Amino acid sequence: MAEKRNYLSSENIKILKEGFHFLHMEELKKLFTSLILPTQGKKDALIFRILHFVKTGDVINNPKVPSISCALKGKIYPLEVNTLILKGSYKSDLKTRIFFKKLIGDDFHFTAFGIDWINNR
Image: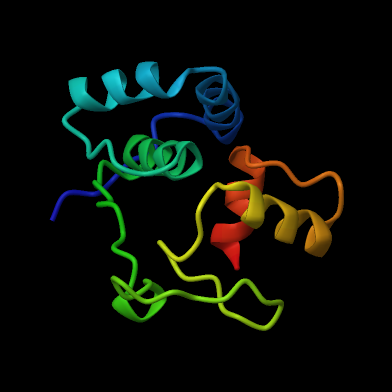
């Protein structure tokens, strides 16, 4: 079995990571396509995936969301504080925006950070 070597120093890996954050998703996905890496996922997941590939040579596929964490088709989930946020159970509409602003505060926006907040819960 061949030994895996890390050809980049930890400082170079850090610089590379910072540089990837400046790329647009389209640019990042183009890079992934040229390296024959899976292009699905959010920017942070893609950056983690490419850094892992650079360090180890191993390809990480996009993890699948467990079915228990996904909303059932056709079922309506109430917008309440104690209701679990399931993938596919909310919409980016005014009602949902008002709910999250009440829950989180006036700083809430449906931006990448707002969506990340939802997905982390």
